[in-house]
Amino acid sequence: MDVKKKTCVAIVIIQAIYTGMFLLSKVAFDVGMNPFVFVFYRQAAAAVFLAPIAMFLERKTAPPISFLICFKIFMLSLCGVTLSLNIYGVALKYTSATLAAATTNSLPVTTFLLAILLRMESVKMRTWGGIAKVMGIVFCAGGALTIAFFKGPTMKLLMHHHLFSYHGQVQNSAASGNTWIKGVFLMLLANALWATWLVMQNQVLKSYPSKLLCTTLQCFMSSIQSFVFAIALARDPSEWRLGWNVRLLSVAYCGIIVTGVTFYLQAWVVEKKGPVYMAMTTPLALIFTIASSAVFFGEIISLGSILGGILLVGGLYCVLWGKSKEQNMKTSNIEDIEKAENGSKEESILEKQSSTPNARIQHACSPT
Image (cartoon, rainbow, N blue to C red):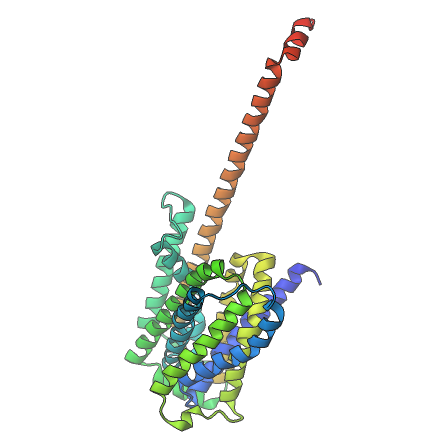
């Protein structure tokens, strides 16, 4: 199998894993699992899974950890992992797995908008690339508002039996009115915190380049932070029990499969095809989640959710196209400058050669 086919298979596996994360997390919350307890167990499982791998692979190459780097990783974990996942858990309890998959498409756009505010990115409004970036931000904002405030006609798959028959009832009772709107904006806030994590992590990795060990430290620190949140907000001991049920399955899946497997696969795809290719495949998770939610849960899908999802995906592709367009222009400008510099160097060499005494003698002795 060639590299192109391998990357396609890896992409499908990655988005399928994320689909499972959306669905299993929603089921765990619907059966009564506390979102804060869930995040603690998930991060603890990820830390236990990644720690021996990181120590085996990077213990000899990892640079020493100073107090400043440790503090940066701690704040990175608090902002982008602990707060983001806890808010995401509450939002998912209020809404649906389909909405979680849809708003994930706004992550690259949110990251880009944050990079503009921090002056890490620029927008040139006189170019097609800059116009496309701005349109992408507008489409994403419109998609979020459409999902939050517009329901429209609903459609439901005509199946009498579903894998989790209770899920549709829970979702219908939870996803209504102000609760739904609150869940949408909490989901967007979680994505904004995740985007902040992406931007901040880029700065932290410059001073501490051991990616796997840095990820393991973030999981470990976020598990401690999440434990503090869970202890403060989940006082009932019954909320901490897992048992051999969907709670344990969702924790193990999100902590080990999502954090461990997708980390490696995404790093491999980015290495082979680049980050833009990886981001362009994000809408696959939305398609998989819509289909799975309809088949397994009998989830009712509204026209507003579909239109909002389309706008979010459209905004994603606009921003990616704009960045690709500007990158191509930048590359072509660099090539033109290099050609001009090479041409000027050749002319100067010819001028020097023509000005030497031997060159003047040869020129004088020539028949012409």
